[in-house]
Image (cartoon, rainbow, N blue to C red; front, side):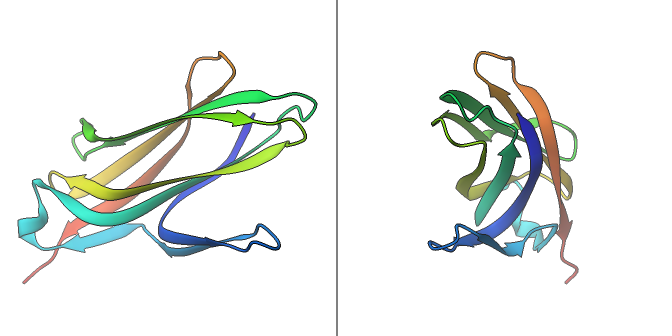
Length: 139
């Protein structure tokens, strides 16, 4: 299994005819007022990953976990995604989309989404680290 890419956006659109995806409002930075810190921010996030390199001759199980870390590298347990997928044979690639409506904010700084994946019974391996800079707005 090969991880090709992952990204964070606020929404995505998938064309039903071609299965092509359009990523809308990709996130790299948030500018928030000071009263937003220490809370769960009501913000739609989509984390999308694209994987290839599967043996298409058999069914497979894939596990993906996403963990969020604050600027002090503390894991924020309010945000954790664990997914177990059955990938049917004849598929050598797939895209996985997770949607959340909450983003816990502790302090200004760089937040890291760490993505782990495994195929079958293999141990989870970190395949990507996505960052969002959270800044405090000046009044």
